[in-house]
Image (tube, rainbow, N blue to C red):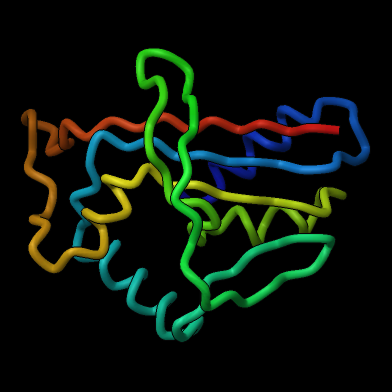
Length: 145
């Protein structure tokens, strides 16, 4: 998802020069990773080792404890869903590079998190002649001050 969460947090900041916290939650109908997604995930895991990255109190932390299992209420039509908190996404690194926000947390819908790491999850299937899949997603960005 590249910098989409970062872009949404930046837009949500509006004319604020700083905020206390940012939360970026991803809801996916499923996550059937392409070969490129699997490769980039493998490279990321190799670089991080068995750690996940968290940005708290203005500092990055490498965590090895279990990521929190939570619930997030997404805008309709998705609604309340189980999520994995502190799911390492690019936003946890990019947002603090240019915005003054001491706490940045990312979340991933639990089903998608399971899909993307399972070796049994198939690659996405084309749903139309353009080759696009029928996977849908919603990104919810909340900034608080």
